[in-house]
Length: 181
Image (tube, rainbow, N blue to C red; front, side, top):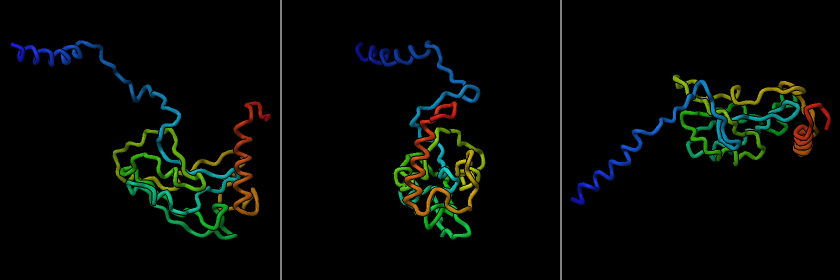
């Protein structure tokens, strides 16, 4: 007799769930906001004058446990300058078929060139379109930025860039919507 009651008790969980209201999510029509620190799509950032922060060091690719990042660096010249350093990321690809969105690449980046956005809609039915290139990953130009290649505008060397870029970013964060600091 006790064995019979144990099996009925086990089915009790199933029967309780059958009569509860279903929690329906209206995903494509109603998007739920993500947490502020959610790890989503990657973004390659720019300095305030428009030059790219990526220096082509490939540390993000080395840190990636899924081997989802491919970086090919190239040297800057005075005629064609894409970043303030000696090098820039000429080819940058992230394979979202392999990426596990762990964020280790973000921690490895010495210039904070690579960050993650809150964008989580990365699905596609074409495998080729899930390999994102540098053109898709680089942040859009904001007001006051100039399309690279161009000479350095924030200083003469990388130290000036780091100091002035950090100061400009901090002052833009503290600006009020009226335009005054």
